[in-house]
Amino acid sequence: HVRKSLDYIIGPLRAAHWEFEPTSTEPIDLEIAAFCEHVFFESINWDQALRNILKYKIAGFSLLEQTDAVEDISAAKFPNHPGGGQGIVITGLHHRPAWTVERWHQSSVNPLMIEGVTQHIIGSDGEQSGFRRIDADRLIRFTENQDGANFEGMATLRSAYGPWKMKIALQVIESIKHERQGVGTPTIRLPENAIDEDIDVAQTILSEMRAHQKGYLILPHGYEFTWESTSQGDNTAISEAIERANRDISVNVNAGFMMLGLTGKMGSYALATSQQGSFEISLESDARFICSTMNRGSDGWSPVERLVRLNYGDAVQVPKMVALNLPTRDWSKVLPVINQLAITGVIQPDDELEAFTRRVLRIPEADLSTTRRWRRGIESAFAQLDAVTLEDEGLNATEAIE
Image 1 (cartoon, one colour):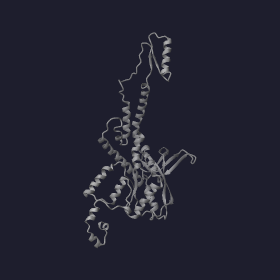
Image 2: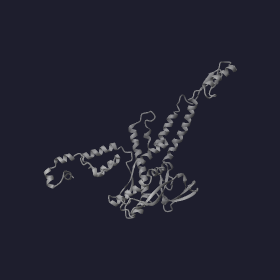
Image 3: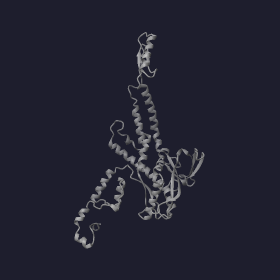
Image 4: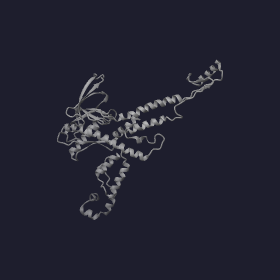
């Protein structure tokens, strides 16, 4: 349940559409945005990098060391790149596990930033063990809920520790209960004044009934055996307490609505809908936090800006990383509203709205070379055209409508 509660956050963010928004529609700005997408989403494994980034949910922070190199790029795809077929690209965003961080080196200029970290290397065939310092200008740091100079932050998983610990204890108690009271104990009550032969016969009978030779009980005449507890019946409700811990674990990530109806009781659709709103807000907040860290940086430098400056210089604008189409909004309800607004004339359909609709529905982009212009209203427009006027003006029907 703990791992799945984290998947409620990690899964939608990995399924989102990550891209770079250009600062304008100028060719150079569009190319720079495309170049950033090529480097971050095509040249490296962005999905793996995103999973490593989101480990701040577990440890409170995550560190990625950026490496780069000069490599060949497509001159046809990036004609404005001054490298003429070569550019500086990111070769990796390498995860530095939280448990290897030995010390934080606080910045002397800004106490909310770091100058670097000391990492403990456990050693391998390719590298000796010891301590290594990594400067902050190579580190991309994601700290969740940073409070002052607490660079380790407050992990989402930390507040799930209480219900998790309680659940483990309750599961042990429940297992003991099943073992002691769920398995029957064969019992024989001996007759009064039983002799040794009677006891031997009883032991033989009981040992044949159980695979475990000691799994029986012989009661002398006048003795009774029962299971006693501090309450009558099963009033401790261990299973219900375990389910409550499961709900608390889900509530920890604002996903308590995921547990409604899973325990045999009816779930409330209205309650699930209201709780889902809080979950969607927190999910979008995580997406903005990741984008903000990539765009602005945590320790005085921006990975996106550095990439743009190294390739296109200081005179250009820097695009912004964004996460779109998070699977948190029910577009089946939104798109009919857009359609109705278009019919009533409140909004006017255009290419940008069409592109947006295609993105949220995850259907291919429009191909203008094969676009079919025969849409609603076009036929009636043709019917109103004066064929003689078209002929006088030297226009065909399509040109006249345009």
